[in-house]
Every structure is written in C-alpha cells, then in structure tokens.
Amino acid sequence: MERDQLPFPEVLQKVFDDERVPIHLLYRLSDLTADDFDLFNQQWAAASPGRRQLLARHMADITEENFVVDFSPMFQMMLTDSQVEVRSAALDGLWDCAHTRLVVPIIQVMQQDAAASVRTLAAATLGHIVLMAEWGQMDARYAAQAVEALLQQYENPLEEMAVRRAALESLGASGDSRVPALLENAYYAGDDLTQISALFAMGRSADSRWLAIVLEEMDNPYTEIRLEAARAAGNIGDSDAVERLIELLDDEDLEVRLAVVYSLGQIGSETAFEALTHLLEGDHEEELIEAVEAALEETDWLQGEFDFSMMQWDEEDGFDEDEAGI
Picture 1 (tube, rainbow, N blue to C red):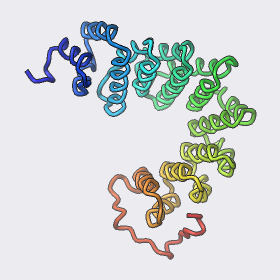
Picture 2 (cartoon, rainbow, N blue to C red):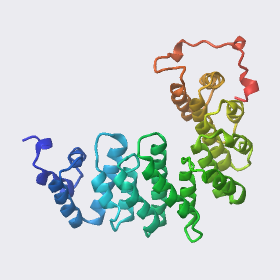
Picture 3 (spheres, rainbow, N blue to C red):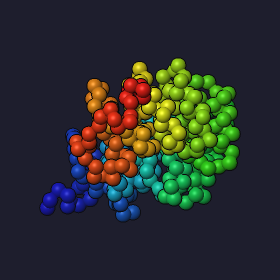
Picture 4 (tube, rainbow, N blue to C red):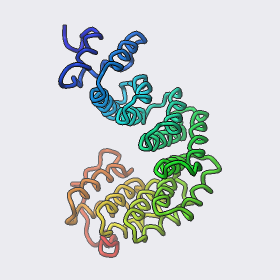
C-alpha cells in the first residue's frame, strides 16, 4: 500500500512518532471525519510539548500556502493548548478561515489568554475577519461581534498596549460609524506607537478622508511613521498620493522605499507606472528592483501579459527622473 493510502491510525503514528515530521502525511489531517478527529485528539493529548509545537507550526505553514486544506477543527482545539507557541500557530492557521463558528473562540482568546502576545495575535486575526466581511466572504453579523469585542479591548485601560494597538489596527477595516472618531483621537492623542497604529488603521479603512494626514506624515522625521504613511497611501489607493510617493522614493531608508514601490503598484496610475518603470533603469538594490517588478505586475497596465523588455523610454517621454527625486 502506498504511503498516502496508509490507514489513518498509521498516519497518526508516523505524524506523532517519526523522528522527522512526514510533511506529506499532514495533508491527511484535512477534512477529518468525527471519528478520525477523535483519534487525532487522543494522540495530541499524549504528545510532548515540543512535538505539538512542531506539528502546529507545520500545519499553519501548509495552510498559508494551500487554501484547499482545512485544519480548522484542529486549530480550534489548539487555541486552548498549554503552549504559547501552539496557540500562536493555531491563530496563524486560522488567518484566512471564514468559518463563522471560529469568531467567538478567537474573541475569547483575545479577551482571556494569559499571554499578551497571543491576545495581540488574536486581535489581529479578528481584524482579518472584519476585512473578510467587508469583502463579502463572511456574514457581517459575525464581523459585528468581532468589532464590538475589538472596541472593548481597545478601550480597556488595563490591557497591554500591544494588544490595544492591535485592536485599533483591526478596527480600521470596519465600516462602523464609531471608528473614524476613534482613529482620529488615537492619532492626535496617542504616543508614537499608537500614532503608527492609527496610520495603519487609516490605510486599512481605504478611506480618502485620511489622505491629508497620511501625506503630511511622509515628512515625519521618524522612519517608522514615514514607513506606515507610505503603506497607508497605497491601501487608501487615491491617485492624489502618487506625486508625494514618488518624492519619497528618495528616502534614505530602504524599507520606506520598498513600501513606496508597493503602494505605487497598488494605486497603478499612469504616473505611478512610469515612475516604477524608470526605477528599473537605475542602479538600485536588488531587493528594490524585485519589489518594482512585483509592483508592476499589480498594475492594470500589465494584465499579466505586458513584456517590459520591449519598452523603450527616453527624455522625450515627458517623465523627468531627476525632478521626481528618483
């Protein structure tokens, strides 16, 4: 019998006992029957902490790369594991999961988990749930539950600041009428880290009302704030940000320049396209060139078929690289 046709008890034996985790057999854990899930739980309860951590991380990595597998019942069970690493991996694995039954368990993790790092990750995961609802991939009623929980978590003065910041960032995806005032207050009244989170949330909202603030923060002396402003501009997607983003291509920090490239690709206007294409002709870091190529693939100009090797540019094309600050 071929290895991928092993009886399920033998699959579990190899998964839990082999010295090296047989990655190909982990796919057999997807879409388990109730009886097989019970067998998995029995083996899981008897496994060492190290083995549980290893399996949870491998399963989360598989989920990130393969949208067909469904380990969500196992990940839900792992949310109450004694190991922080296991609970964190479970949340990573549930990031793109649209099963509504998981909203309440993730809320409970955000509210009750003993580790602030896990509560922070749960708050971020709820933000993606809110985003999926905005995209029509999840029932909005469940996203509303997540929003209420995130609001409470952000407004809890006893909560760790990292968790509150994650809640604030997650709320940016919500169309709830209370959110704009919350973001504005956090931006003007918060410390630098809270201001960064407010900028992140403004970008996630994709609302042009925040564009003036985002453009202003591109001149901030703090690299982290310029970086978040560059990202936010791309997420908002307003072409009015393109000119300022092009100027920011001259920023001294590579991460800021990479964020600018990504944002220009997201906006995808003609001017953004020309600026990105001219970058390919310059002497820039390999990482930046790779980012430019990826950003160009995002633009509507390409449509997956455009061949940049055929492009010819000269000074008469009307785009001055020196004036743009590139």
